[in-house]
Length: 288
Image (tube, rainbow, N blue to C red; front, side, top):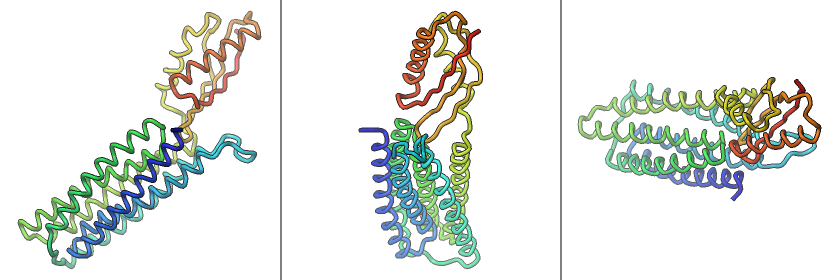
């Protein structure tokens, strides 16, 4: 299966699972009156929206280059991350407001055991989704799937906090535990949104890859041919799952045109063996 197909499948699986969880949690929240369970339901609904956006934007990113987008559509993944971060942040702010309101006017929770059960189920499902999405994000180098995995990492925390709050409420009868738990969940959601937005913005702004990547490329080029004297003007960036490298390679001035071509192709092969066959590489050569 091609990387883009894997990404779309992973996003679709995540959206479908999150929808089932959201419906189950919303039902339990209505039956029990628990704001913490409602917070996890809203979190899951947010996951549905974000995973759905991922599936859409990943399909856009899979489109090949065209006359108006000569470099392809890979940045659609980063745009997906920005939209997701805004949704997450707004949801978190709303939950903070609801939690504070409930602290001011406490409400009774009925059948907290049901809330504990759905929180435990959500914890198990979220753990499985995090493992699955992180594996697919690593295999496909997808920012969108990494952002999706972030949502379900927050689900691990939100389900745990909600479950513990309800256990505490059942054992101690403290009504403030539920809204405090919802506020803690909301703060964690907002923090995750900031992290996703930062990463997506850096990709949209063509931030260069880490310095160690340049050092790694230098090591790969070392020994590719005795005519190579070094390189300069190194630039790099990432769009979606594609890495871009551009630099000027310094060659012995007596190197023939044919030999220069062979050395350049050998350098490209080495870089693609390490960073993937779809890596885009632009090499110019300077005689020294």
